[in-house]
Image 1 (spheres, rainbow, N blue to C red):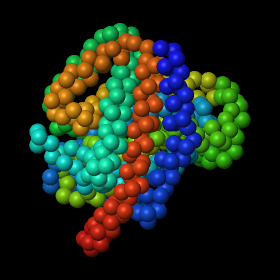
Image 2 (cartoon, one colour):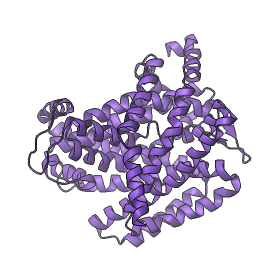
Image 3 (cartoon, rainbow, N blue to C red):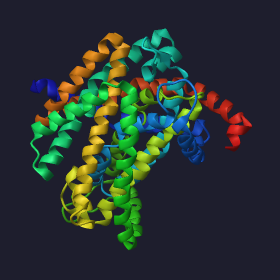
Image 4 (cartoon, rainbow, N blue to C red):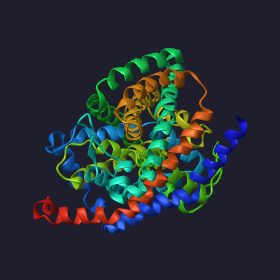
Length: 450
């Protein structure tokens, strides 16, 4: 067993190494240039389409707004709280700058993923709209490349049980046990029941729950962070200067911070940014394929907001609070560092805000990734496999809440990165389709002026 784990560790070093990070960034930059900076120029348009998408017309199963909330439910989670903290501990304040860069080019990646997902989606035997990398690989690149889509579905189905299930349940159990002395087994049991009740209703129920919980918790967490930053307004410019300085120069050791090189800032900033917003991994387009919309570009501009909101908004608040509070030199790491930073700035309340936020975000991630895994399994084995998958998914929740997950996390993290390989190939090969659909959409005067 140890030999197998060592092999996975070596593979993990490759798939999350410099070549993969460069490939994801380069793909995002390439798409940004090909689209003539459209995702950045049309950010305001995206928010207008998001608002209009609450009651959008067209084919699909859930509203455009709820499709984004479902995608965000899977991305906003431990990466925004623990991931940002880890990036700063390992890469210094400059890591936050590289997270921003990842998000800015990642918006084009997420846009292209959603456009292709809607353009090449299908209707399954249950009458539901299904799509994602496995479908736009098969339908866009041709039958001879279908094996690449099958690989994506295999990686996604297995990785989901780690990154989207057991790891999330374990995070909730740890937070509740540390702060409220709730036994891990009880947390796992309650989570399993709640997840089961939601999954019975399929994508519509998942989308409804995500559409309520995600905005509520994101606004509460973001609001708490803004209060801290407003109360420490004089220190914010200094914090921003620190971020920019250490993005391009080494960060010296201070307090409990061991110091970091520029490469460490870039490496951990990019890696944690991708882990948080999942741009390029191919997960989010599975949710966007179910959206009610009459044009793939319209859903694409909504989808790209996911990367902006996840990293530019939520991750930035976490990172700046950690730096402004001075907690980044404390020697703490992960969620404990974020909790310390919020508690230092908001005594008696900040720590609970982080704990409650982490619990809610992890729960919604359980829901979002259940849908991703379900669609990967359906692609591989058909509709008959969906119910058994849901049962296994629910059973895995209490197991994850009560067990050590080092091996599971390592395997899931590795497979999560491997999902990106077939997806990035498809995005590059099908980029002319994305560009053509975008040009056609915005050549319409009504859309161009909107």
